[in-house]
Amino acid sequence: MNLFRKKDIAHLAQDAEKSGFVRNLTAFDLVFLGIGSVIGTGIFVLTGVGAALYAGPGIAISFILASVACAFAGLAYAEYSSMVPVSGSAYAYTYASLGEFMAFLVGWNLILEYTVTCSTVAAGWSGYVVGLLTSGGLNLSIDFLKVPAEGGIINLPAVFITMFLCILLVRGTKESIFINRILVFVKIAVIFIFLCLAIPNIDVRNWDPFLPFGYQGIASGAAIVFFAYIGFDAVATSAEEAKNPSRDVPIGILGSLAVCTLLYFIVAMVLTGIVPYTQLNNAEPVAYALRVIGYPFGSAIVAVGAICGITTVLLVLLYGQARIFF
Image (cartoon, rainbow, N blue to C red):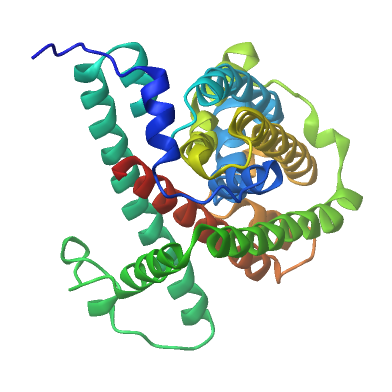
């Protein structure tokens, strides 16, 4: 009846060996898993909004500051995952360190986090896809594109993508990781296309002043863009499927965090270099910037990247949710 009894680490390790999971994920797979969960629409939206409202061109520094905070959490996850190589993530770590009652609270909070986030991300995926279809000339009934609170009956595209990814995950982790890898390649390719088009059009005068909101603006921007990194901890839920969890999981967490920070920094610098930061407070700052420099097809490029980005985020979140349930 002791609410604070702890589960022995050796016992957790024995449970992991009996779980039935196949250890077939490499450190490379886990890095892509982390990138898939972090690089979503945030890179296409949050960079511009954060620059316009909080930090100006200094938003690039805000991304680095936020990544340092995430790195401390990532180091903690990495250390725990090497000691407790099980799929329960923070739930299992809390069970081993603080006891059953705290683990109970952490476990249900994780389930709430993943459930609400999956629902929101699925709705975002639906919005992008419907927007793309509408711009292509299709007239779709709002009844099946919106939930009752938004004037419809059911959001079928959101239901469809969730069910499709669930079926994919049921087929097997290796297949899911393969699809995630392809989609991550696509969205990174979209980011590189943006950079190739934008870098020749950088005007360094747009970086002056670099800190229009002062150092306080960098801190405020870091608090906002911190949410762009949420999801990298999902890598820790794959510990029972990693070939060498004590080595691969830390590499997956910290490697994906490093890659994502570099991409965020470069995109933020280029975006604020081609367009004055004051013009970036809109729902599609990257597409807007591409139109300003003479590439009107920019919105289509961003839409493809955003759809791939949202799909990988949803895939990794559903993957993590299943491991937390397990």
